[in-house]
Amino acid sequence: MRMSDKDVTILAIESSCDETAAAVIRNGRECLSSVISTQIALHTEFGGVVPEIASRKHIEKITPVVDEAIRMSGVDLKDMDAIAVTYGPGLVGSLLVGVAFAKSMAFALDKPLIGVHHIEGHIAANFLTHPELEPPFACLVVSGGHTHLVVVKDYGEYEILGRTRDDAAGEAFDKVARAIGLGYPGGPKIDKLCKTQGNPHAIAFPQAKVNGSEYDFSFSGIKSAVLNYINQAQMKGEEIDRADLAASFQHAVVSALVNRAVGASKEYGFKTLAMAGGVASNSYLRKMMDEECEKAGIKLYYPEPILCTDNAAMIGAAAYYEYIKGVRHGYDLNASPNLKLGER
Ligand code: KG4
Ligand code: ZN
Image 1 (spheres, rainbow, N blue to C red):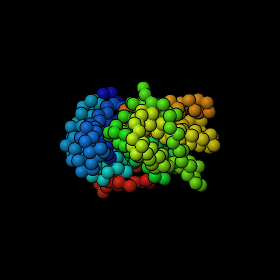
Image 2: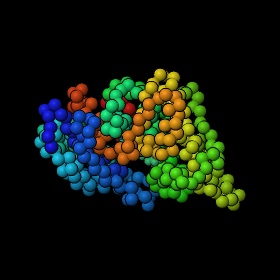
Image 3: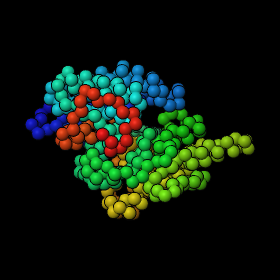
Image 4: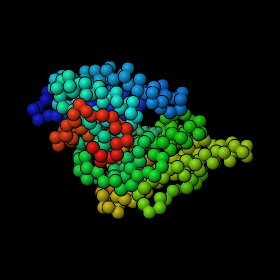
């Protein structure tokens, strides 16, 4: 691998939930390798992620995954400029595996250690897919644990315009999918079903308004409305059209996301909007957001689907901007399961 003296090459590790991942990223924008080992099949029979199983599996997978990422990148370990790792938010047992591994590597190789915020990583995934994208821009972050509307003022500088008051968007997808028997993980299953079936306007689910906060979200009302709909149909002995129900639910959630993201971009005068997180790979959200942004004259960015869900490439991208600012963590870096966006 040819490198110039100015190139910054970062080995990044991610283990915050149920994916063990490692990647090698050059200058925050170029992915030299990205390896993801998913545990989805293991957790499916429990209907969701079992934290204890997740951390045990990370321990088993982390060495081969990191080895594979280094091998595929063609970069010698001695030529890495830093070791980056997600240190929060996430499941504490899962985070600890990555953090301990990264600290040991940094110590053994005498390389700088950079702790990265998982959500900052999701946002930075856009820099890998779109080399021309630069702050400032608005960003809708929609994952299994988070729903935030933020302004990316500069690299690593965020202002939160809105957040969910209850469930995250991905969490709502997962709960509704479980209720209609689609299984885990719900988001991709609902997305797939509704690509070919289901009328998004079959059932009108409520669009929750959050008092006093125009850009906050609430999804528990939509989720409860779906569960009530199922209960009532069961009591009446009526058959449910799963595809109509899923498509109508998806329409309600996606409309709430699109209305607030586009509304805020217009109000604050942002001509650039990005999306990030697992739910940003939802095809209905991408389509509706594409259409509404085009009407409003807003340039829309989203990462390729494999970079929307958890991966380490995004952590390497975010770490680059920390690296050039001089951010370095000590060996006392710890997992921080409730780390807030913008918090260091
Ligand atoms: O970002 P992510 O991989 O992990 C977290 O940081 O939470 O997001 C996972 C979430 C899950 O709730 C999953 O159901 C949802 O993203 N998701 C989707 C899709 N793909 C993943 N939701 C809707 N449509 C999808 N295609
Ligand atoms: Zn994530």
